[in-house]
Image (cartoon, rainbow, N blue to C red; front, side, top):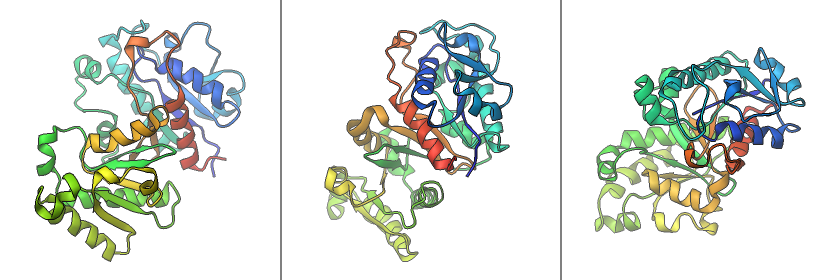
Length: 322
């Protein structure tokens, strides 16, 4: 057990992140400790803020205001209007959060949404998103994205690639590595002794014996059989159209999906507001709300904080914080 707080990075200053941080503080101030890393100017005016100098001060600060570890940005923010000059500072805040959690100053990392195009245009950010950037910072070859909610946990094997590229990207090695990383995280971070894993097929009806494609027979099924032989409690490939109804979900702890929408459509349909993005395979715990910067409603007080609250709460729970 640990008393270190969760580090919360600010994300895109022009988006809804600062509003979400404040709403999360209001909801969680008596439940857990976290601190926000960013420029205090970017918070909504008259925000209850308690400036801290180091993460260890966050626990005491929680009762007085949102604990803020200041990180200066070049520009003040205008809600809804991202500024390219702030792009590098957004990246630097993420690096600071990673450094603090790896040094043991924070128990886990929770990241508020970034605007990828702004980072690419303003700071030549070479990554498609947080997950790949965090893996690079830690020299991790493969990180796995899990979407988690009270109703469902799901992991896509392939993520941000065109649907037409999925069959050639779906190799036995990639599938097996994804499942191994997921299994390890379920045991070490979610504290499941013998996690139950259900694997979706790629094609309709899991290929229908080869009539609708052979990937299910030639790639997915052999991997599942090999892992069963290793002692893993795993089944599949299952037809994806019957894998996510209520009775089916009771039979497994996580579903392995073959591509992005196969994973995200069911969880966003079941629990849109409380879905949490969890990165598996990193040397620390990382969670994030499962939505974007919502520039169109930023600064209007309309942002739903549920996913951010759940992301912070899950990070706290996974870290086993006292």
